[in-house]
Amino acid sequence: MSISIAILAAGKGTRMKSSLPKVLHKISGKPMIYHIIKESQKVSDDITLILGHQFDLVKEEILKDFKDIKIHKQDLQNYPGTGGALKGVEFKGEKVLILNGDMPLITKSSLEKLINSNAPIAMSIFNLKNPAGYGRVIIKDNRVEEIVEEKDANEEIKRVKSVNAGVYIIKKELLDEFIPKLSNNNAQKEYYLTDIIKMAREKGVEIEPIEVDEKEFMGVNSKYHLSQADEIMQERIKKELMESGVIMINPKTSYIEIEAKIKGESTIESGVVVTNGSLIENSHIKANSVIEESTIINSSIGPMAHIRPKSNIANSHIGNFVEVKKSKLDGVKAGHLSYLGDSEIESGTNIGAGVITCNYDGKNKYKTKIGKDVFVGSDSQLVAPVTIEDESIIAAGSTITEDVPKGALAISRVKQKIIDNFFYRFFNRKR
Ligand code: UD1
Ligand code: MG
Image (tube, rainbow, N blue to C red; front, side, top):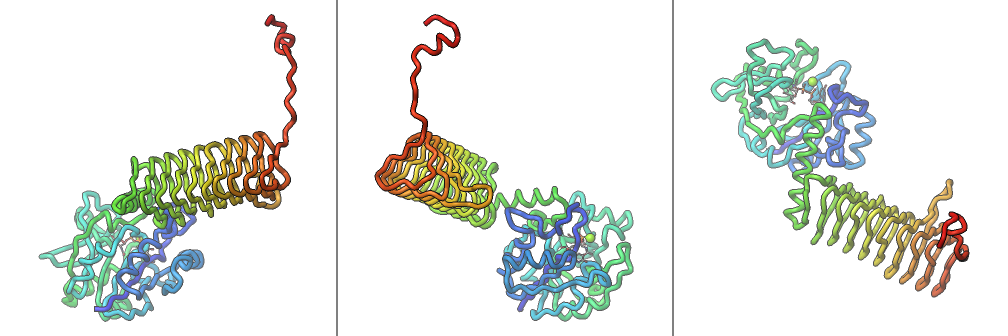
């Protein structure tokens, strides 16, 4: 049976206490809504997103990752609520799978039981010790009778532990029949999608309750939930990396964003952050280093190094307290305490401790080019734009403002003076 998917994401998410719409809050470096769209695409190519609150902003963010997704604007004024969300939406599939934008942990496999149900309507439920906040599912003889929202429930119903996880699969013709019949006669004055269940029941339509894993169907309603969901997502990301051959030391302490790629025989020590857009291959990232949107191949980085966006580092050693930004390094050693920004450094070159590329004059950024087998002495400043040709030497402590030709020594520092016995005169002491 062909399936269309609706992802409800028009709500405001009041409980997030944020001006950012709920579904744009990030989990492992990508908006919550990104995760559910990715998984939905594994199930169907007919996906409609229902947006409303801060429509333009949410739409713009989604289009960055998903070019040709269908977007429907909910009439929140006249038809608020999860049922109102589906008013006027047309689906191609024989069945419609309804998901929520705030469920970032759902996977294709966790949806399988719903998708494979033969019932005209199947809905997800789980049992909670503390069901507060969820709609309660009234089940008799393994048949769903109705869903009662917390705000409409009496004390007896509030004690029901079976709750509505909020994911349904329903025959399109039933949806088309029931959606126009929904009313907003309830505590929240909203059009509840959940009222469809009662209508279906009264018509004798079978509704299959399908028990699902709370960890996968968790709805994110607060920033605490956000952190909990992110922890689960991190666990998944890291498990997958380790199963693919990456060594992770003390993995709980590292944060790897969802689109970061780590390949080959790589080791990630504790406390490492790797952001989206990064590729690490056959490399060793030592403790507490941060790799942002950069490529690292056959290299060792850190401990405590900061590789900022658009860096490309191959066959190199980057040591502690070195910051690299938008630079291309191949076969380079920069062992200690350097800033290398907007630079291009070729193989065999050694960057001494404390070397700084002065890439910014307060108005513009300039490039530093360093050729092959160059020895840059410690504590030198390279004032860009500047080119240092192959096989040259920069004396320690130099401030380089002019290009250095091939094979040369560049030295720019005050000649050392020796004043004998100055110490004893100055402190009035005997030698
Ligand atoms: C809903 C269910 C409840 C279930 C819970 C599971 C209803 C009436 N209640 O309640 O039974 O236990 O989910 O998490 O459906 N949305 C829209 N348009 C709207 C309102 C909401 O698109 O007008 C979207 C939201 O963006 C969100 C989803 O629908 O992604 C659920 O909305 P939310 O307000 O979180 O529903 P709950 O009150 O949690
Ligand atoms: Mg609500």
